[in-house]
Image (tube, rainbow, N blue to C red; front, side, top):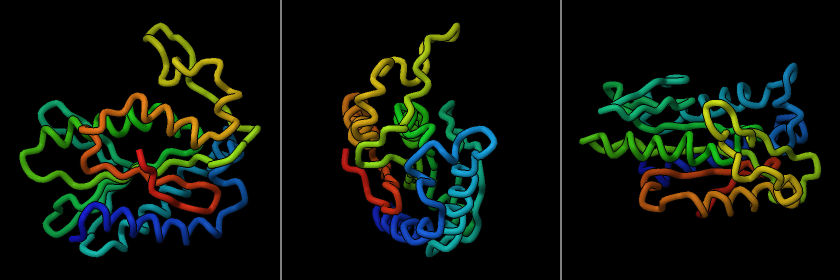
Length: 203
């Protein structure tokens, strides 16, 4: 089985090839995440499942798999299984609607807890985001309200729509760098879809 970096690089390469056939602005706008036209997550998840299924050493693929160990829980969009149903890789996809603070709070932080709860080596984790690396005037900033259950994920960014639209990727990269604990990123690779280009994110 390939190592985490090799797996992430292969996913990035194949994903970059696959998304060229998708409509314009599929990952660089909110056109395909709105109610009635919310094709982005499901269609990209299908692509990622195909890619994972084709990775060297992967024998089975699971979708939306709940996993837990010693109280730590994750639910990856895609799990690649190796021989004997061993875990080869976990993949999560975040569409334009969720490529924000949730990348850390919902994805990376729970994975770190799950990884640390495993006595065996934990499978590598790849998170794919969708953020244009340029000015994007129609970009939205969601999940900023205070609710009865507490602040939503992006509450601390409330009122920053103009900053986000100047460059969604650079804005959220800066935010991640503020809140991410580097020691908790072991085993994690973030890939970003910028229009039809897929690149590794350096935190």
